[in-house]
Length: 179
Image 1: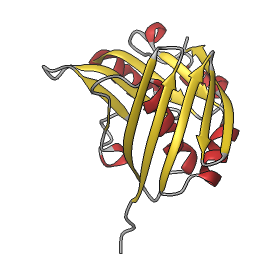
Image 2 (image 1 turned 180 degrees about the vertical axis):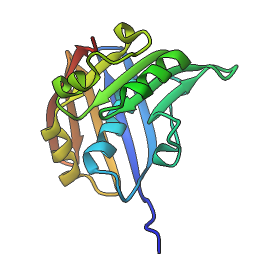
Image 3 (image 1 turned 90 degrees about the vertical axis):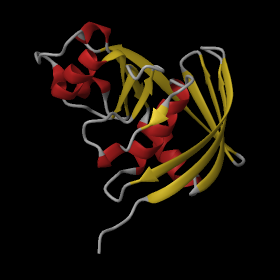
């Protein structure tokens, strides 16, 4: 019998002071049995950090041709393509041709991600944005977040604060050039 996805319901009070975005988000995320908790929470935080009208989760692992998140224009063009983790150069090449803006949010060492992509052909690689989340923050969220949770997320000065219940966790969000 095939394993099914585990659903997470996150209600998030988002205060992105750096971008002037203040929203109440109601997210439902499916965690595939093969998906690590770090990846799941990196997807949720990527949604918060890049929130804009029309941003949506894709079918994820069920659709290998789609990114983790994207935003489309009313006429169907891909405005924003968001990869989470350590995507292959071929995926980024394709994404950069298909979307106006490409962002990678990683929960891995950004130097490792950059080394894996070095010397590879990636369309407009200089325009691809790379943001790194600190793994200890994601690990702490795994320990504190149940399948139905309320988060308060504050992003200010490159710092990320996530409150779950009575606990507040902190980590940096660092920007890195891809090339």
